[in-house]
Structures are given as C-alpha cells and as structure tokens.
Length: 233
Ligand SMILES: C[S@@+](CC[C@H](N)C(=O)[O-])C[C@H]1O[C@@H](n2cnc3c(N)ncnc32)[C@H](O)[C@@H]1O
Image 1 (cartoon, rainbow, N blue to C red):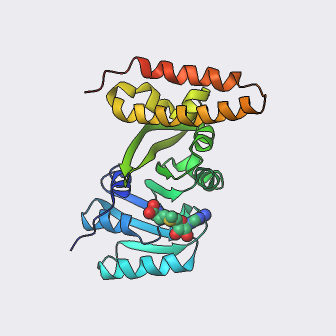
Image 2: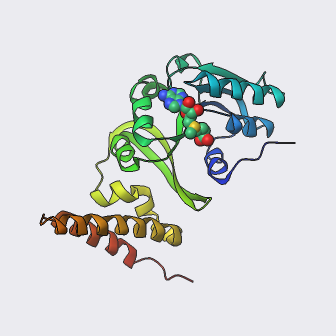
Image 3: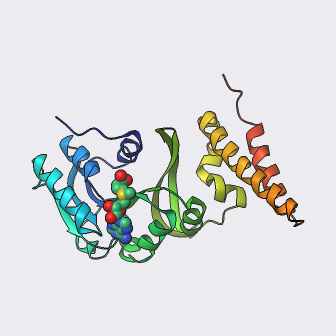
C-alpha cells in the first residue's frame, strides 16, 4: 500500500517539481520523500535529520517501502555537507521560521546553485519573511488547513534582490496580499487572526497606559486590505 500524507505534507509535496533531485531536511519519518518516490515524481532524494532516532525511523520506513536505492539518509545539521548533491528542490517543513532561516543562512552554496526551496514554518513566520525579503524571490506563498490549523507554505528561490516588506506584508505575506482576490476566504482568515492578535496587543498597551498608535495604524491597514475582497458566498 502506498504512503498517504496528511494535508499539510501533501500540500508541501505538491510544490516539488517532477523529476526533482530532492533534499528533505528534518525528514523525521521520511514520509514525504517516500510518497514522492512511490509515485515516480522524483529522481532521487536525500532524507536528512539532525537526530539519530528520527533517522533510524526514516531508514526503516524507506527499507519497508523498498526505496533504499532511491532515497539516501544522512545525519546532518540543516544543509551542512549537502553541497555535494545536485539538489534541484529542498523541503524544510515542520520547523520554526527562525530555525529555517538559520539553516538557509548557514548554507551559502544554495545562493550559487539556486534550488527551489519549499518551506513550511510552524511559528515565527514574520521573522522568516524578514529573512526572505533579503534576496529570496517568493514565487508562491500559499495556505493549507489541516486538523483545524492553518499552515503557510513558501516556494522560494534565491535571486539576490532585496524586496523590503511593509509591516502588514510581514504579518500576512506579500504574495498573499497581492493575490488575495484568488482565495478570499483564506485571506480573510489570515487577516482576522492578525486583527485578533493586534486587538489583544492594543488592549494590553492601553491598559498599561502605553502608546498603541503604531498597532492601531497596522490594524487599519489590514482592515483596509479586507475591504476590497469579493463578497463571501
Ligand atoms: C517536527 S519534525 C518535522 C518532520 C517533517 N519534516 C514534517 O514536516 O512532518 C522536525 C524534525 O526536524 C529535525 N530537525 C530539527 N532541527 C534540525 C536541523 N537543524 N537539521 C536537520 N534536522 C533538524 C528534528 O530532529 C525532527 O525530526
């Protein structure tokens, strides 16, 4: 029986290009490369993890799927030592945004080889956007819901061009803002979540007698972005 992925990882897998030479960083169970290899969608994969426990779980799953010839495991920190592989696509999913940024920052070879990066941070998403604004072209940013939680997925390539982002784009994602009319329901959820967080922050600042004008201005700019959305069905 072929591996089935939960919605979050299936959405991540959909961005891996046909025939890719893939690296799955922090692979844990290796379900993602196994799923793609079983369907003939990748030519080869390196499944890496920093810890031996997850890696032996990955090795066992790869062996059981009969894919040891197509998926190699490696214990390493982030992308360290992976420059020797002709990687076309790299997935880093299920980690914090700052951890993902640190992994990319520590691997200058990807600025030369420019693989497609598919990133799915669990938290610290604005911090990851800050990092990506300094030379990384976000071709696509999308959301997927899984088990009642909303996940962001970034598809990026290094091009060396800095693209400063506004405070609203930092929270919502520039691609999400630019393409908000294409998926208004999800964009509305993103905005409502940020508005609720800002309301809490504003209330806290005001309770402490502190200035909340910056947060109120940000709130107005997010509310304005919701105003031109197509009406809900
Ligand atoms: C929460 S799991 C995510 C597994 C899988 N990628 C997913 O999205 O379902 C995070 C995995 O990343 C590994 N990890 C954490 N930091 C890492 C690093 N710097 N380099 C490689 N692997 C790392 C952990 O050992 C763990 O197996």
